[in-house]
Length: 161
Image (cartoon, rainbow, N blue to C red; front, side, top):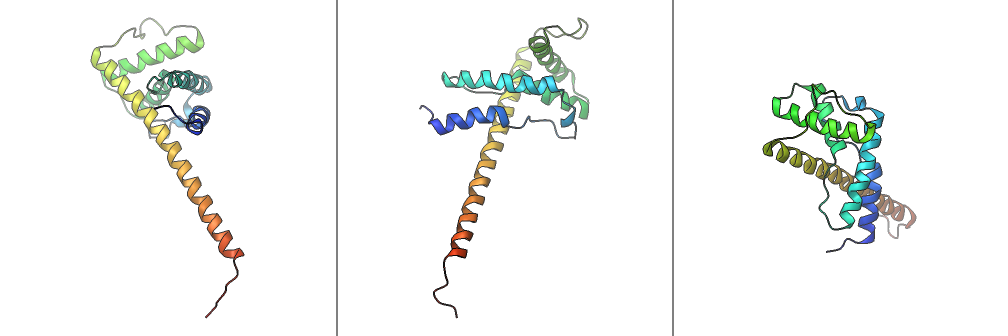
């Protein structure tokens, strides 16, 4: 079923304004500026894919930002460390035109790690779109409450007991 124009505009605005989902723990401010910009650019590419009927998902840059903040909060196990180095290597190479050092670069993942990364990207996408939808609902609710209060204020009391 094709999306309506309002939904498409909302998705486009969301690619630019949705928050970057970070691991809880207070390290969200430590994301490098180049990575924040990469998140926005990759979201725009992902948005174009969606207009062609593909299922939207989180991006490599979003996964990199999330795993970066997770790694600063608590130690990762071996599998997630491999996933982080893999996605960080891809993202760094894509946006900085260089590779991670040979001794830490991960060029491929196991099937389980690939599935875990896919699940993380889907979760990140759902998390940010849900946050946007909740903010929009809250805004509509506040507007409605303001309209009701304004109408009540403007409407003279016909009977006061």
